[in-house]
Length: 211
Image 1 (cartoon, rainbow, N blue to C red):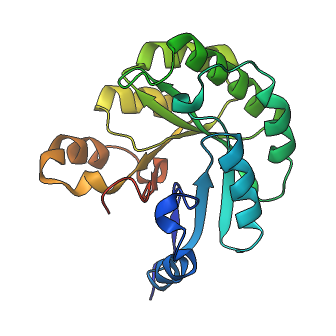
Image 2: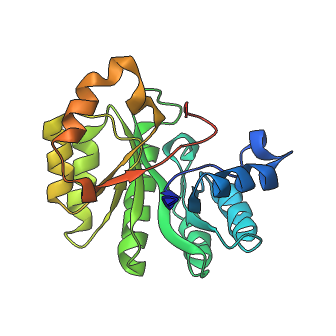
Image 3: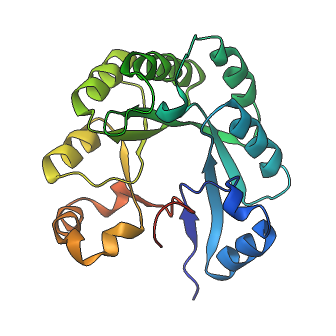
C-alpha cells in the first residue's frame, strides 16, 4: 500500500523548477505525494503561485511576504494579499516571520510586515507558515499580540525540546525537513521522538534544502 504524503512547504515557483515542473510533480505523485503547499515570498511570487495552483489540482498556496523581502514594507501590500487570500486555492498566510541571523532587511521592517500579516491571518481565519531565525522572543511577542486564536506551523523546525513544547502548547504544528536525517541531527531526532506524532508535518522546502 502506498503511503499518501503531503509536502507542506515547497517553493514550486523557484527558478530551479522552471524547465521541468510537470516532471517534478509527476515524480512526486509517483512517490506518494498527493498534495503540495507552495508558499509565496512576496507579492509577485504569491500571484504566480495562485495562478500555478489553478493549473494543478494537487497544488495549494500560501500568500505572504518573507522577512527577507520586507525591506520598505508600508502596509499597503496587505490590500493585495487580502485579495489573493480570497482565492479558493489559498490555504494559509506565509511564508512570513523574522530572520535576525542574516538580516537582509531591517528588523523594524520585518516586525512591521509580520505584525500586519498576522493581523490579516486572524481577520481571515487562516493559519500562518512561520520562518524564524535567531528571533524567538520578538517572534513570540508578536504571536502573543495576535491573540490566542492564531494557528499555523513553524516551518523547517530545528529547535530544542523546550522551544518545541512552547510552540505546541499554543496550538501550532512543527514542520520537519530533510536535514533531520543528517548524522549531526541526533539531538533534533531525539527531541522529535518525544513529541506527539500528530503535531508534526513533513516538508521538503525544495529546492532549497537537501531531501
